Every structure is written in structure tokens, then in C-alpha cells.
Amino acid sequence: MHIADQSFIKNQNQRVILNELMKHEQISRAKLAKITKLNKATISSQVSFLIEKKLVKEVGTGLSSGGRKPVMLVFNEKAGYAIGVDIGVTYILTVLTDLDGNMIYSDYCEIEDPSFEMIKPVIIERIRLVASKVPSSPYGIIGIGAGVHGFVDMQQNVLFTPNSGWRDVDLKGLLQTHFDCPVLVDNEANAGAYGEKLFGILKGCKNGIYVSIGIGIGLGIIVNDELYRGKEGFSGEMGHMSIDFNGRQCGCGNKGCWELYASEKAFYDQLCLVKNKRRITLEEVTNWVKENDGETLRELDKLGYFLGIGLTNIINTFNPEAIVLRSNLIQENPTILNPIQSTIASRVSKYVRQNHRIYLSQLHRNATAVGAAAFIVHHFLMESEELYGN
Image 1 (cartoon, rainbow, N blue to C red):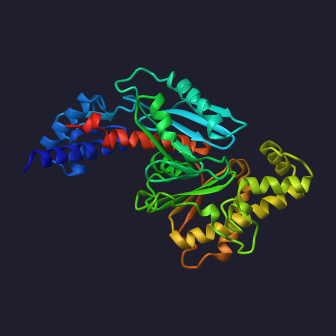
Image 2: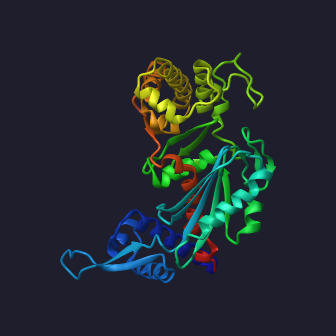
Image 3: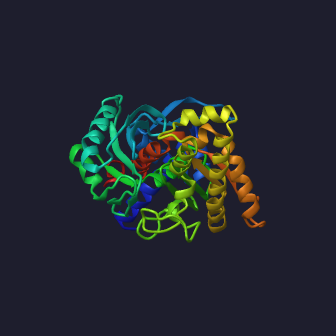
């Protein structure tokens, strides 16, 4: 066997062991050997390597099953920290997480002008602020992940953001210029889906759909435990799926796009017309719902209906185990789920009707930022040359 083959096998075994350690609060070497089907000598040597790398700790003894009490092992989630950034149209949310997705610090900053030239210094400033909160650890900041509301290709170039006007932006290059660490850039819905898969409601779900509903609508798609990106990285842009062939003109060039009828922006625009107001806040909507305001309830029913139409198409296309909805409006007013569910029930094939569940995001507004940090954590633990380089 070539040395390269031996190194590859060794690294693969380290990843398998580390992945299993992350699933358990505590586990013994003997239990690791049983679960991974690796021999005891391999477990012993690779666990020693991971302890040396500060990724695993021994934490005393467990219960005996007849012989010597086993020494218990735990994953050291405090060995390093990741920064995740959600760059929205009206805000920047930056979080600091440990290696297990636990949030250590977060910073929320509202913005007025989302153009790239205006937002560049703000992004750098907020990341530096969050980076200053990193506790002492063996690896410090292991990287920065960013989720962007727009089209991001496989080379991590931001090609276009429909609602903030970015075109051909090298966000990754900008961040690498200012910060000496790995940088990963992806679509915000992909990041949200990955966050829910690793740390949220999609944990343990092999096939799930994450639906981000805000100014627009985007999807993150999990297929066979993997994030599905498509050939060029543009999968999930189903906010631009036509639900009315002769409908309104969309900024993407299409007509009758789903997000023109079922996004939060569409809801607020319509309610402003009904209420004859220039601006309506989430707090006002929530209060009107509590007061059983007829106009507000009717518009929420319409929103649920239009969301249900698009979700029916998604269910018929992907047949997912679960759908996760990420929306501040729905989070605060979960009654919208009733018209969503009734619309789906009346339209979806009877053969798939019972094979899916709809959930609200477990990570809430932090989903994209935590997911962007999760990309960095995965890269560090499973692909980093710092750990596996030879």
C-alpha cells in the first residue's frame, strides 16, 4: 500500500471518529469501536491524535459493564470559533459560534443603502466587532462564512442580488483581504438549510426543504443528507417559479413569480394598500391579529393560500420528509400555517399528502448566519489542512 493511501485511510478514520464523537455527549473508546466498526488499535491511535489536536478530551470514567471502568471522551467544541454573516437587504447579522453551533455572541445592524460600495465598510466593521469577542482557544477564529440573498455560483462569486443590486461582486476576495482565515460565501437559503441540518429542525432528516421567506423567497434543498446546489450552484431559486403565467412583471424578467404573491414584501405592500398606510411594521401586524382585525386576517389568509400553492409544487417535485419555513412574519403569527396546510391538502397528490411535515425554523432569524458559520466548522473539522495535512 502506498504512503498516500495509508494517509488517506488514516484521515478518513479520524473524520469518522470525530463525526461520531460529535453525536454523543460522552462515549468510550470501546463504544466508538463498536459503532464505527474500526479495530481497537485504530481507535486508540486516532483518538490519541484527536486529543493531541485538542479536538477531543477525556472526562473521567463511565459505568463499568463488568470490567474496568471506561474512560469517557467528549468533543471539545471550544477548540475554535467560527463567524457567520447574514447579509440581508436591510440588515447585517453577524454571529460567533463554537464548533457545535452554540452561539457565543451576535450583532445585528440595520442598513439603509444595501449597495455593495456602501455596505463594504459596514461588513468589515461588524465582523471585526464580533471577532473581538472570541474567547481564548487552541485554534481561535477558524474562518468566516457569509450568506448572501442572491445568486452565488460554485466559485463563490456573487453574480446578482435582485433586491440590493449587486452584480459580479467578489465578496470572498474582500473578506480575504481583511481577514487572515478561510472564507466561504453561499446563498442565504443554502446557509439556512445547512444550519437547520447540522444544528436545527432538519437534524436527522435525510431529505428536507428550507424555505426562506422575506423580501423574496429562496430554497435550500437537502437531498440524501447533502446540500443540493445544481450544476452551477443556482438551485433553489423557486421564488421565481411562475404561479400566474400572465401575472405581474418580476425584476428577474419573468412574469407571475411566486415571491410577487407569497413573500413578506408582497404581504406588507398589499396590507399598506388596504390600510392606506405608507409603512406597516411586524409589531403592528401582530397586534392587529391579536385584535382579530378583519383586513389583516384576510391578507394573512391570502398569503397562506399563495404560499400553499408554491409549497404544493415543491412537495410534488421533491417529496421531502420535512419543510422548514423561515419567516419573521410567520414566526410571530403561526396562524398563517392553517391556510398553508389547507391549501396544500386540497391540491397535493393524495399519495404524498401524509409523507411530509411543515415546521417553523428552529434557528429563527439566526438560521442563515449560523448556517454560514456551520459551513466553516464543517470545512475545518473535515477538510482542513491544519488538521489533516501531511
